[in-house]
Image (cartoon, rainbow, N blue to C red; front, side):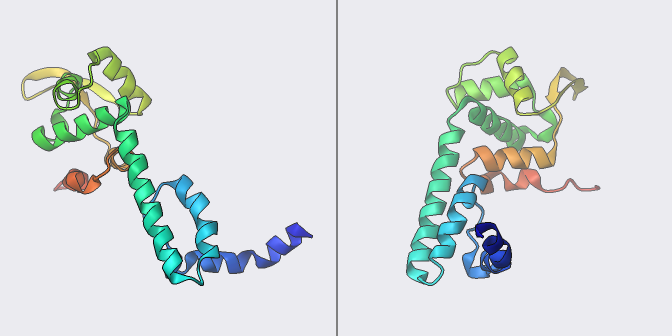
Length: 168
């Protein structure tokens, strides 16, 4: 009977979720998964719903800030800082190591950084750019934007890195 009830009433629940007032904004998928049923329960109380949405946004920011302090988060921040300072095509593991050590207080060898880059699904390519030979990160806009959303509390600081290149 419960299954039949869910099937009959599923469309009304979907309409509630798609309602503009019920949108929770850009938050982590797990928070959205747990927050949506609670938001539906609060839909008739706009004040409580607004407080709940604010709490969800604050919790989302806390999660991302906490994640940015991890070694992977610091490496992603180092990549974004290097790309912002030097350009997307000039980021090497050596530069990431220097920025991570100086600015982000992360002491890892180039080899360990390379391992972390592989776990983040970032590719590197041995090439010569501007007369300097090194392992340069292959910039994948979609992947880097995903990593920035996951590890950067303030993604707007790096928004210019994700604009399409001119001529493409």
